[in-house]
Length: 424
Ligand SMILES: *Cc1c(COP(=O)(O)O)cnc(C)c1O
Image (cartoon, rainbow, N blue to C red):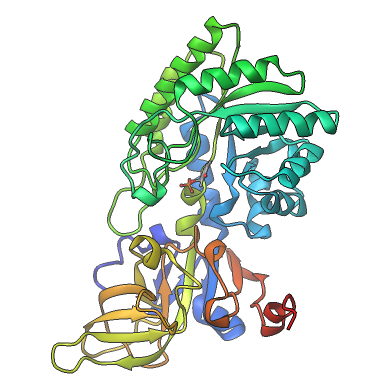
């Protein structure tokens, strides 16, 4: 694989002789034990990414709130909690996961446009750090539920700064046309309402403009808008000492540069200097995307006749990893055993699901044969959490690697797991 020896380590893997390793564990050994398809995560990579953020923000009073939806495996939630992270959740189910992983409810921020009554109640009873409220209806419902439970709910309004994150439209959230957050005038009105309610306590201002953001500028623009909203609130007697800057820091999937957290951190420190503000950030992808790979085996090769394409049918599919089908996302694909001599052909790597959209990668030049193991890189975020049972396929197991150890952190889902909820 002459294209990759320099950069494979950015994706948490490397060849030893001709065999692919994650940290000090042979990926072939993991496949022997758990089969394919299987997700494998590197603890060292998550720790290193966390450290980059901590280093970038060392001049600031900050806390990392890991965006649970990126990868909600309990072992990863525990690992991140041990590093000092709190959590950003978007459902009651995610709150239950955090609590199962012994996460501190006082470190939980609840985001999302559609919080149901039972989810608000769960979070109010748990005593979370903050509710990031997205509409007038939600604010009213939250005040009502807090009154019923005789508690006071800490709130931030999710402010939509109308800043272009310059990312894929499906993962952009900070523009006027997006469903997320409220524009400035409405935010001011909601803050006045929150300040008047005896069951709500104004905690901060929240903002999240999108995902896979390539460079700091849009995030800095959003922060400037938040500071201006804070000044207007102060003029109305509403003091804010906490800003939630959201997540969205981009990572490398192909050849794009990783988001420059150092540059961003310096800009944040400059803008916050002298304000006394505390901040939260909500990274998901940045922490876990390149910590993970999806291992898969080639089932069949369908070589091109005439001018058709050549297809490698593998045992991982869109139900395991939907990003290529959903966003046209690029995932690098490399052989687990880099030992094959022979013709390198362009292959479309596809799954067994009955959909033409069921592909993992297109036109990748590889030497393949039936039975060969492949590693699909950058699969640690929005991979396992978006998996489904389409075609009655069981969800893949998940493995966590640490130095020369590995352990199963989720077993493969079996048919009984799937059928048990049905009532024929
Ligand atoms: C999804 C999401 C995040 C995390 O986004 P990443 O791109 O994974 O960093 C953070 N905050 C909110 C509100 C989100 O919806």
